[in-house]
Amino acid sequence: RSVEINGVFEKDAEISASELSLGPKARVQNITYKGEQEALLDPGAVVGGTISYERLPKRGFFERVNPIGLLYGALSWILVGFVVLVLLNAWAPHFLQNLKVEPVPNALVGLGSLIILPIAALILILTILGAPLALVLFVFLALMAVIGVVVGTRWVGSLILSPSTHRAEQLGAYALAVVVLTAFKLIPAVGTAVNFVVFLIGFGTIIRFLASFVRAKKHA
Image 1: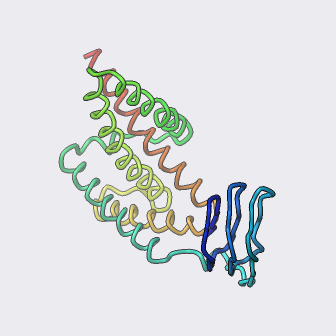
Image 2: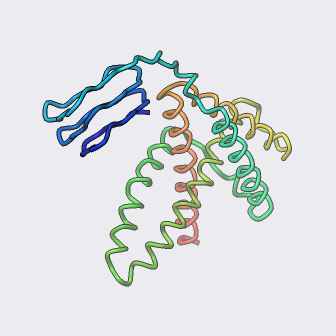
């Protein structure tokens, strides 16, 4: 972790961090610092004593990974996905069958919706009559975001394993996709980007399906 000091420290301090920086408003006394690189001092920082530095060996990326956190996240999404997929199969069996996953258009729709809908909700909050509607919109967005992650992950599962009509095989493919996407998180930046794109694809798929459903109802 990195530590930044930009205030007054009247007493001596001992700090262990990967990086230490002192901002222009920093006023410190003696500091004993253990880190991976020397402290960065702004020209405006005032050191009343000394900064003693002990270099610590830099940790590799994999040493910084929290395996328990990754495992907990994977198991959580597997459980959430199983619940969502089972409920959708029970309450709306044709919903998942009629979803059309077009990666690029759906991802663009997902990105646009992720920008526009929260802004619309924030604007509604500013109006007295629109505040309850904004709350409903935020709840809708949260629910669609969760379902979007599940749908996007389910799509990844269908790419890994051949699509199947058997529910157990569908759930197995979904679980495998969660494991694969979790493994991608071990790759700096790339893992985050891949998971975000998968989310956008799933989220956009849901938004496009709902939009086409509403249009069909209007023309019915």
